Image 1 (cartoon, rainbow, N blue to C red):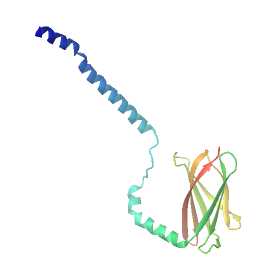
Image 2 (cartoon, rainbow, N blue to C red):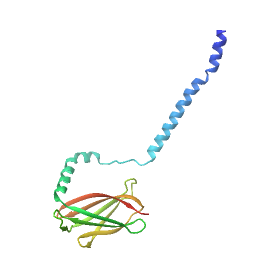
Image 3 (cartoon, rainbow, N blue to C red):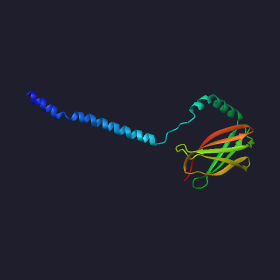
Image 4 (tube, rainbow, N blue to C red):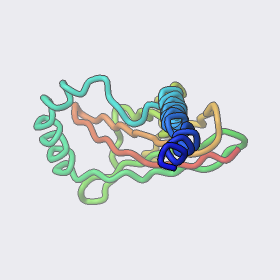
Length: 166
């Protein structure tokens, strides 16, 4: 009787090692799929100059304090000008609200979710102390604009998020 029971037990449990093999094959397949997807998608927010950025951190803090001490304010105006086009204008005011005339105003547009579409524009004076340009961007959607104002050797920077209509 014991021999008959042992024979039936071994016959019924032959599938257990196959179950272990199948389990690990499924785990490897899922992990391989996730690795392939991770390697083929956007790399995320990274910088290629991480060491230099860390070394220059205190300098950047000092530059931000110097910028705040200037007391300048920017009036940024962006309007839809057609498909993937934007009328972009900047006005600069001093600490007492007086209009300032910068030496140059530049804007760098970049997509926060796509690399390779950055666009730099130098704004031209439009009168009344404002600088502007009509900018054509390669695609509609969310864009970030870094505005840099230079005046008398001093620099003021700010970033504004924009939405460009299709």
